[in-house]
Length: 122
Image 1: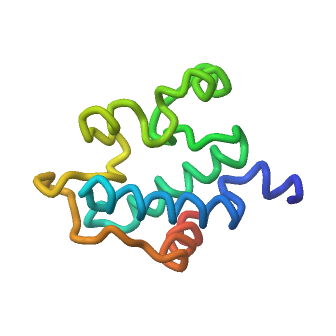
Image 2: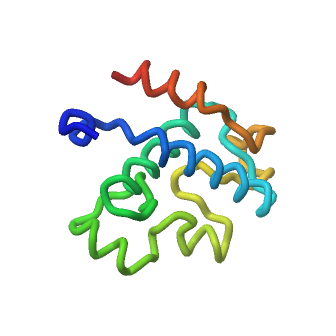
């Protein structure tokens, strides 16, 4: 990977696909759904993949951290985070319970959709 890619907001395709597959599998196993707006799902998955590239772990991309490396070691905010595992509360709106007003009806997202959203952000 070249330096320009590393410094951008774009994750590697390997980790993007890994996080996409993880997200689909986790949604199905927990009975949760992706947001009705696929752009929300795409941005969160991209953020997880970018953190996996940079930090080695899918740290929640929707929070601010003073020290990301320390947060990764603490593991509380590594996806799925403790609030999600314990109470099905996803701050990122990636995994939504069916009663959530923003929950869609899908537990799948294509890599093409994620890349399309990525392209529209730049």
